[in-house]
Image (tube, rainbow, N blue to C red; front, side, top):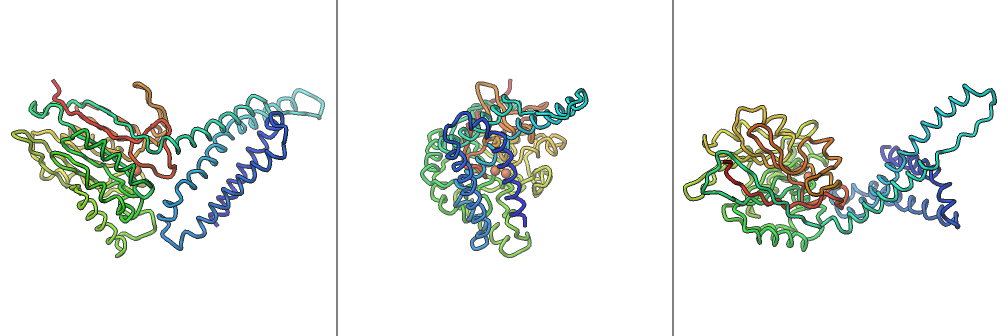
Length: 411
Ligand SMILES: [Fe+2]
Ligand SMILES: [Fe+2]
């Protein structure tokens, strides 16, 4: 039933968009029939594929079914988004036409009205949708694995002078179920190891749903090196909550334990509402990690009170927490002196602009802190843009992120 609604909705958008732009295409293209055939054939192929995927997904796990076909589902997404956003000028045009119709009806005694579409709005629809379509396709081909090193100096007031320029490599959101390339993950590991970090932290969403998505990448993850250790926390996708399993079911528990074991085998110390004291020579700081805590409908297994129980007082404290909404909703209001939170989760929506100091993404309308460093009073949060991808197998403007954080003493 849901599928029928979905397809009907998509079909309505297709027809609406087609009727809106067909006259412009007729002027541009000599062979109108060819355009019609290409447009509707593309629609039929995309719909047939999606219907096939949805109908057959129960035969395997839904997770694997969609992970294996991520390029296909991404193409579907590209088609759909391009037409949906492209329809906005047409909708504006239709609203204007209603007003123009009413206006001419009121001031004229004649009953014959020909209110045509505004040509520039029709052209806008075509240009917007064409640009979006090609940009999103380019993002699949050239953005998906275009890893970017983001350097950031972070100043902490009580940071020990002996640990000046302490290097934390922060990665997040690998989403290995759809990562789809061991070679590309090997490239990531080389980039990380060349930096010779003090610690490497991973802030969650290792998989999309099931622990076994990560098995092919285990050998590669083991190769990540860090002088003072590798630490991780869980993201909302690491709980197997999106495939209809109950938390108290045997299958759910097995998956959870297996995921934790896999991370440990890869050399990560998974922090589940707990802390570690990192000691380097005579200097030390607290590294705290919470389970996922997300605003809204996301799971709230993170427990900062529990995690802070064993921290050493009066030394710097760094918190790993997957979802940045945890910072403003809980951490800033808490009595704890947490100098820096490291998060991921937003992916920067895998779409936006980042040019020399200017950054924009639709993610900013959902998350106040969505990429990079933010400060409030004495507290700071750094949000990683994610290394993998989910839903759309590409990146436009907001590239896969390897954050290299240089921690310094604030003078
Ligand atoms: Fe994620
Ligand atoms: Fe997430």
